[in-house]
Length: 150
Image 1 (cartoon, one colour):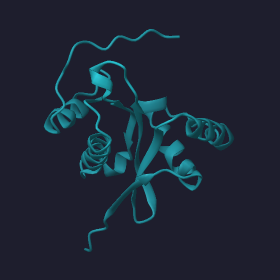
Image 2: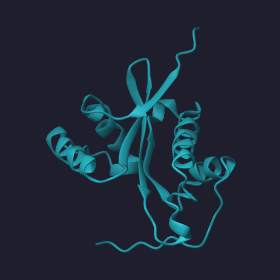
Image 3: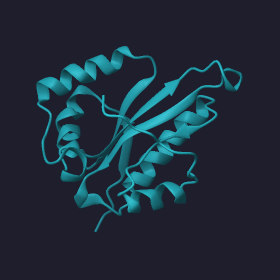
């Protein structure tokens, strides 16, 4: 069997249908998909934010993973920017194939090239396998993550 390579890149409008399908997983959005029209509207709005980019992992032309990367300017830390990863998702049929690892390494490379002093993410306490992945990539538990429903 020939290995099909993974391609990582900033998402385009053409990727949206695949991305929305990934987010409709029961462990992400309870099996419900955002409509394509709503997804397109939000995608365009995301492009209006400085340094906020949706990225995808593709294999054989299919979207198999996605994450959002925000790079923020800071007045603290001597003006060094910081990065935040959100909404990491991989097609369940592709779990444990290195896609999450590849996407996070890709995001970390971008953050390093941009001079970020840190790359942060948060994960639900229930996602034990994801925690192991993050720790294997050098992420360490730091402080607490607090959330309030808005």
